[in-house]
Amino acid sequence: MDFRHEQKIEISAGDLMVLRGRLRQIMRPDPHAIGGKYTVRSLYFDSLTDRALREKLDGVDRREKFRIRCYNGDTGFLVLEKKSKLAGLCHKQTEPITSAQVVSILNGDPALLPDHAPLQAELYRKMKTEGLRPKTVVEYLREPFVYDAGEVRITFDYHIRTGLQSTDFLSPLCVTVPAGDAPILMEVKWGHFLPDIIRDAIRLDGRRVGAFSKYAQCRIYG
Image 1 (cartoon, helix red, strand yellow):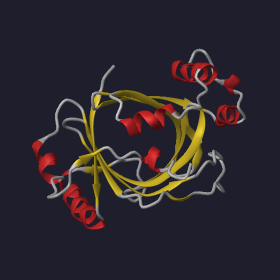
Image 2: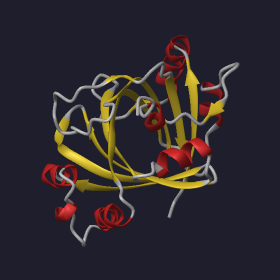
Image 3: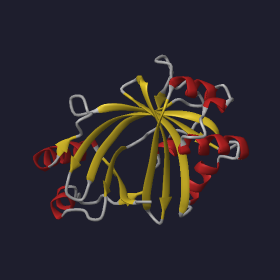
Image 4: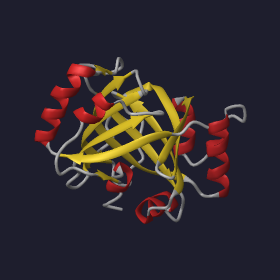
């Protein structure tokens, strides 16, 4: 299992303008972005006791979370993801999933999840044995940049919105509201090394690596 480094830094609107200008000179936009950005909508899962949320807030060293994700409102392309963290390093597993399977999950009967898809089979098992259930929709706007050396990916996430306790993930009419006073978030991810040119470009005085969680922020109302 390959783990990657990940850092999260809360920045201001002024920081975003400065960093965006710097990175455009040395990195390239993610080819999937439209006009340099795209909308991310995720449906997060948690146990009946909110284990994923509590472990995040408590800073547990080893933890995991499941989510289903779509981009730019395109529910014709959906992915199931499991994100694992260990000692500050991250690993993400993904599998395609159909809208019919998502509907089955939302109806509380994940019987359409097949045994031959390992990640879907794991989700099915944990829904049955650990009470894993959809908890909330998280939505935000993302600006992604990539750099081949070091497998670097830098994203700016903002306009973070919460579906409250709604899990109407597939509906274009799913109601979301601003997730409190959520910041602009810069996420820096890389493989074995972070090139100096990138490290220098993202350096900001007075900004430090933090542990902000979009999922936790979107659970502030319940």
